[in-house]
Length: 139
Ligand code: CMP
Image 1 (cartoon, rainbow, N blue to C red):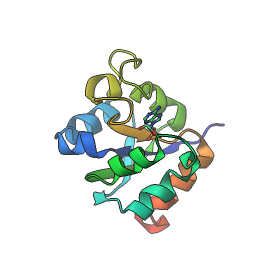
Image 2: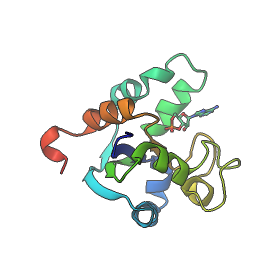
Image 3: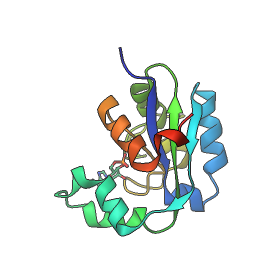
Image 4: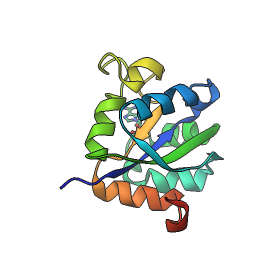
């Protein structure tokens, strides 16, 4: 059975634009419970480690520059089928291709400045949650 937890990040574009509250309300409206949250400014080393899987991609430098450009908000979210549900709630990577009513369609600026991150598998959800939160900080 698919896992019940996933990791999301409200990215620096959405945080700086004051969209945090609306995005959290949207996620709660989709049935997610907030189980852990932090507000932080990623270092270059943290951003490179978090996105290490994309290290060889042409957008890696730009992605880490963006993710270190301001405050972001990682959160652990819980509901049944957490990973796949969150990915459908946030929509396609590029807001131009995202379905109506998704978080990225509503709040993202571009494929890179796309408002929100979501884990793409249960395995990565565990790894990404552990990246930001100690076990004791997750309810
Ligand atoms: P995210 O879900 O955080 O996972 C990797 C990120 O890389 C993705 O969201 C986008 O912000 C970014 N990304 C993916 N593809 C591209 C691309 N072609 N150009 C720029 N950024 C991209």
